[in-house]
Length: 365
Image: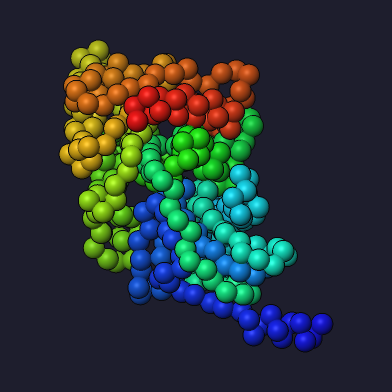
């Protein structure tokens, strides 16, 4: 037993976050001062292959001075081994600078590991510092043949989709990006998903009627919030180097709060005020649509929304104004599909919507 243990230790290999044997997906900025590459956005992460039986990763949750997020706010990581459709491991990042087992007790041979951030960027950072295996690292796994960019809010993040009731409290353990319409759509089309999404966000205002750090602003950067947190100038995202085959946008639900006067006393919610707000919303949606067209001029773009969304007509009108963006309107939650936390999609609704979006993209592509 001692001899075997020593043999494994001798064969153990370690590579750092910037090694060529690692492939990253999504928007994943490097922090040289921390010594890690961060994958904070939903569905972002890294992949690698090795020959051996086990692999581990050292992951940090931010700067050395940062505290570990509270239990209900911790980032969760999903691990997929050898093309398995389901997570072979899922765990919270419960240490500031900790090594986590990604796979173990595998039959000796070549294995491929995908590590995915299952929770959203508002809740817990994740930075890969190094990977260790008990054998040899192989060439980095190849990317999927196509890539779809998803831009959205809490639904795209998977907010509360593992919670099969109308719970009013959000906890990260009930959020799983790999079960979202975005992840499932990409899987159906054998594509990679690249996500820019945040709960509560909108085109014009967020759910709290604020205009701070909305998706149209965050979309311009690799990870603006991480850069500000580490005291660095936010890095502009390089669209020329980041081609994709389609863009899917799902925004507008949260803007309904502001456009219905949720921030105003009831007596100030006059028809003129609300009408003006809805008109301003349409302008804001149009501007963001045009910005995406400017950044991705040759890429098919699809806007999707539920048929009962408050600002559906304004959103569709803004998309039509561009003369380029296609639209898909579908039924929202159905009673027999159950409901996720705070009335969000259950995994069943996500699965149904994914089929609709995938079929529409097939026609567009």
